[in-house]
Structures are given as C-alpha cells and as structure tokens.
Length: 205
Image 1 (cartoon, rainbow, N blue to C red):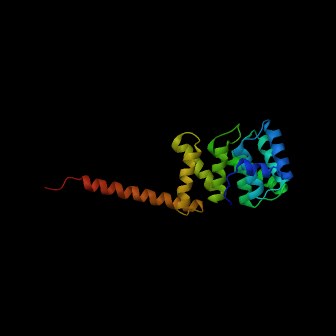
Image 2: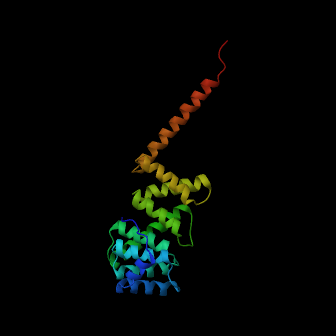
C-alpha cells in the first residue's frame, strides 16, 4: 500500500479545489459535527488520492464508522487500509466484507469471553492483523484466545497477539502444527528438568 504524503496548507488549499474531495470533506465534517483537523484532512486525501477510493465508497466508509460510534479518523483509516488490502472497490463489496468481519469479530470476542460491547480501534486493528496479515483460520485464533484467558484469567488482545505472532514465526498453519509445537515444548521442558536433576546430583565419593 502507498505511504501517506505530508500535506502542507498550500497543498490542502489546492486539493480543496477538487469538487469531489471538497464534497467528501464537507460530508465528513457534517458526520463529525465539527471542522476537520489538518491530520484528519491528510487521512481523507490519502484514502481518496492514494488508495483510490471513490466518493461513494468514502461516504459509506464514514457513515459505517460513525454509525458504530467511531468518530475517529484513525479508526476510519484502519478500516480503509483493511478494505484496500482486500481489494474492495465498491460499496457492495464493502457491505459484504463488513458482515463477514462483524461475524468474525463476534466469534473472536466470544472466545475471549467478551460480550455486550463493540470492539475498539486497537482490537479491530489486531483482529485484522490475525485474519489478514497472519492469515490464520478462525480455529487457530480461537485456540490462542482460550489459551490467553487460561493463562491470564482475562481477555487480553496483546497476549493473544504474542501467541499468534509466535505461531506465525514458526509457520503454524493448522491446529495439528500447534499440537506439534506443544509436544516439542513439553519434550524440551522434560529434557531440561532431567539435565537439572543430573547436574544437581551429588557426585559419588
């Protein structure tokens, strides 16, 4: 994905001459109920110019985010990057992805023992990483979540991410791979214990 360019006030003035972009900014301000800051305008230009989202898709993106209680450009940009990553270019494609994501987020939340609230920005970002960047299937993510709750006694997305990034580094693709790692780990622990016991035995006089 393209890097974000830094926007100068001069560049912003020029960009606002683009009627479509000007419309998008006006609509976003209406949704936010306040004027946009410079970094927020920068984000919108990035989504429109560099990610190549259409006016319709950006308006749906803003509406979708705000309707979920997220009047935060960081959240909006996180969703936009996930869509761009998936090659989503139309509102129909975005709606399909959203219902799929909502289902997956809900499943992960359930595995963590969380209910009665929506995910926050950081949680969405991590869940997208597990699903897209790491490319894990739901059964592996659920396994990491249940291990997290067992180990920490509470839901912790950071802890689950440690487990999952560790599995990614070890090229885990299936639950069978996880079991194999567990067995190796147990074996190493037993060997260490045996070595320790042997080392601590008093030498025969």
